[in-house]
Amino acid sequence: MTDNEIDAPSEMKADIEKITSLAKRRGIVFPSAEIYGGFAAAYDYGPLGVELKRNIRELWWQSMVQERDNIVGLEAAIITNPKVWSAAGHLDAFHDPLVECLNCQARFREDLLAEESPDGSCPTCKTDRGFTAPKQFNMMLSTIVGPVSDESGRAYMRPETAQGMFVNFSQVQSSMRQRLPFGIAQIGKSFRNEITVKQFIFRTREFEQMEMEFFCYPEDSAEWYEYWKQERLNWYFSLGIRPQHLRLRAHAQEELSHYSKGTTDIEVHFPWGWGELEGIANRGDFDLTQHSNHSGQKLTFFDQERNEHVVPHVIEPAAGVDRLMLTLLLDAYDEEIVGDETRTLLRFAPNVAPVNVAVLPLSRNEKLSPTARSVHDRLKTQFRTQYDDAQSIGRRYRRQDEIGTPICVTVDFESLDDEAVTIRERDSMKQIRVPISGLSDALADSLNSMQPKMTREK
Ligand code: GAP
Image (cartoon, rainbow, N blue to C red; front, side, top):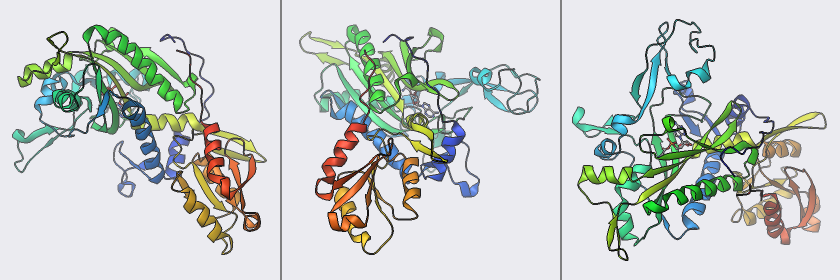
């Protein structure tokens, strides 16, 4: 696929208001500390959001680390030696252009202003008195470390996880006896003092990244750059995101970050337009060279066959957990008319769904409960299950549809005689009767058949 070859995005039924409301109603994600009025662009993840995030992380880790022999993991400190940020260029160059409204003094990111207010007026006070000239605003969040509250303790919350992989390059390479090409992967929180935070969890000041630095011979970097673009795009297809909602977009020269020789974004068709989900960057030898110069340590790979030290080049796929969660929610959201009601559902692929099997006794009843509980006990070690016996069965099906549960298992009075249960599939709402003895296999088959197999041709 070329960078520009995209299909027309299909009609999306979700908008950010519907998703924000569903996410709050169903305990997925909601404003942080709402009892105190919340806190600017900070969100807390509820029980189902936690499950969804865990699935995202685990699927990424499986595909990037577990299934590969030459990629290993790392968890570096969030607050580390400030010299890291000076060497990496973040103290000098991690800036966004900030402008201030001449009327109300509200502050905006100049490069996003046209998007927020196409007519050029102030998005806050709506006047057109204009803005100050842009000044560079450093996006790192800082803190003071230690008991003395002065500048000597100034340290930074990492704005990317990537630097952990660069400063630990030699340590990981030698302890794991890795040879080029090899990668170091990390999942963890990053922090940026974003000027403009909006669109729910799309852009926040505290967020989680999944990044991998792939160290290779300089002469192979162009090939690996192409390889990782396709690999990463295919991974999003494997999560069931509709292919027409994804595209690759190469950065223009003037968009490139200070460290990048070339970047391609995997973009998603959000309700407000195309936006970045993941960046794949060719960082060349920028970071290893900088850290080597600043620390005085050699950060090279010794190639015994060539008998020479090589400064590896780096290809970096960098994704956001929270932004992917928003993508999955928007992409899976659907509404359809059933009878005289609107059914709201999340058409999550089974591998990402927070709950993939719900066990529902027909009613809360002392005869049904022991059988339903024992079915649930057997299933919960194999599937991500939920047991729900509150309210009518119809309402419970709707509730499970809304959180994207692919399959519901209903235990009814007949189950007590025929030792069988009904399984109902979310998308088709088809119901079939299955013996309890073969239930695990039947569920595994159904979940497998619901897992999208579609990928776009390379
Ligand atoms: N190490 C390279 C790097 O950090 P980036 O494009 O700035 O690259 C990678 O960030 C990914 O992290 C983005 O594609 C996005 O998914 C996520 N991300 C970045 N800033 C974010 C923010 N303020 N809120 C939520 N996610 C963010």
